[in-house]
Image (cartoon, rainbow, N blue to C red; front, side, top):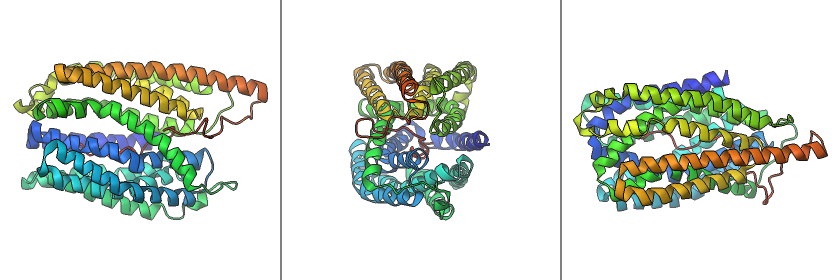
Length: 440
């Protein structure tokens, strides 16, 4: 049932893109579409430190460390209040520096409103996810894409599509989700385990910091080429690339449902030898086959892109074909990370994420100025392959260490404790708190 619910949310996301993308991209044109999507790329990086990492840390504290829900919610909200204002200022300044003063109003709406409203909503949804389950959290998250579909359809009918109006629709949807999440996150303390203990601000902050490092590294690896493209290439090229990336990323939507449920399951320890390794192997077979099918389907469906987007997005079809293998590498590289979560090896995951991000940024800076979007695609593939290889090396090594320890000390020995040396950290845990996908 959890997988069905998670998949239902992802299907609603697909429907939302199918309705919104063909309206928004041609209406804005490549240049404005590039600015609009890049604005949310910057917001995504800020959201990582404001709420995404804290929300992911909440799930691990509640499920894996048996901390009381109310204490976790209390300190998570405080973190958002303290982080939102400086990141809102930094995000607005960065956006104006890239695009000029005309982007100031939508930037203020995104960084001022969404960081606070979206942040509070995300931690409450994560509390629901950790206690009630995937189904309840998915139903609340479905509201946002539905509202955005309705809002964009109204804008299209009235001819009022602009960056400002789109941002306003997104912010309004976030506010509604917040209100509903607040209603359904009351009295979650009844789900506390009998042995649950209150967390501390220090524990959550330490865990959040390592989560933030990992998630921001992943976001940099995912989105860094777009920032470099904005800095070195024409806005129209950025918009066309964003459109192609957006379309191919739709293939990842069903896998997000699988990863969501698999990550939650991984948080519950198993005493069986090679448990996480076996799970990762089985998942890899499934997502690998899916990735190959996606690449074939992308080649077959590519002629439709020109019909949907028109002549302004002339290069998008070629970019889309270059990116057709991206879902395969991304899906496979995510699998060993889930195993590391289950082994409580979150520092290792942080190191893996940071290494992948550094490699990606170096590749983008070396290739994009000279090769443009082709350099962005090549850099993406290389960094994904490095992350995939590093993830499996770490998973195999850490699984063997845990199994050896249990064979000596007994099957009931706990996983490595979340001390400073082996902090349960970095991002291990469900990450539904990555910024809402509004870059349509």
